[in-house]
Each structure stands twice: as structure tokens, then as C-alpha cells.
Image (cartoon, rainbow, N blue to C red; front, side):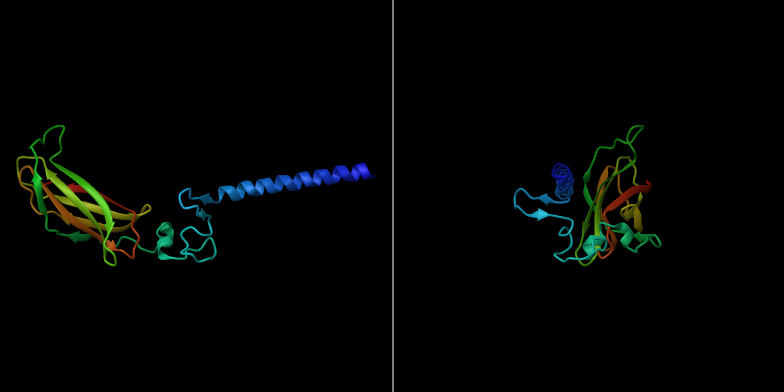
Length: 186
């Protein structure tokens, strides 16, 4: 009986060793060591503000920003804005078959702490006549719209490039992107 017992014991130890190696591999993929600071990051200590809690529950408002479904904010009525515009410069008049009358640049998103989300847009009149463009912007979190805005831009003379601010929702509503488009070039 000793040889049979020894074979069974070796087989059991082999299974236990395989389970330990598999468990170590799983644990290795669930953590990351920062090479510069040496800090080990795991699912338990990432974005949890040093608080332990259930993995499936957001512990801070910042954590909810990464889960758009956790935010209860939807786009209501379209907000109309009439911002003051600054003349940024002049461009050559190039409107034609391959160049549009109006071009829109620069929807960069930033937050004014404890106030509102902000994007600064630049609109360029490539034509030889004055235009009164309208721009539409959608502030989103994930694929969910949290605010729709229509901007009535001050008139832009021939070849003028204008810059103007567009305000989004309050910063307690999470926004990860702003999409802007020209609604009406004239």
C-alpha cells in the first residue's frame, strides 16, 4: 500500500501546486507595480480614495465619472448662448469647391472648478462676405448627452477668424467629451 499511497499523495500535491501557480498568475494580472515609485496598484486601491469597500460600488464622485450609467443626468432643452467673440486674426479668402465657407476648430474641454464645463471654439470665415453662423455643441459622458447647446456667433466679416467660449453643464455633472458642428454657416 505504500507505493499506491505515495502515488496518490504526489498526484494531489501536483494538483495543489498547479492551483497555486494558476492563482499566482491571476493575482499577477490583477496588480501593477509602478516602476518609478514602486507602488503596487490592485483593484482594491485604484480610484477608491484610500477607502476599502465593495468592488462594484463607486466610493467617490470621481469614480462615477468613469461609469456614465451611474450618473443621472440627461440633456434637457437646448440651451442657447450668445457669447462675445474675439477677433483672432485674418485668413485668406479661399472658399470654393474644395474649401467650405466656414470652418470650426478647437473644441477642447476643460472644467472651471465649482462652476461649469468650458470649451473654446474658433470659427473661420473663408468667404468674401459677412456671415452669421450658428454652432451646435453636445456635451457627453460616454455616449450619453448631458447638455445640448446652440451658439449664435456674432457676425464674422470676410476672412475673419473668431474665438469664443461655450459653457457646458455644471462641473458636478461629469462630461468626457464635447462634439461641436456648424448648424448654419450664414
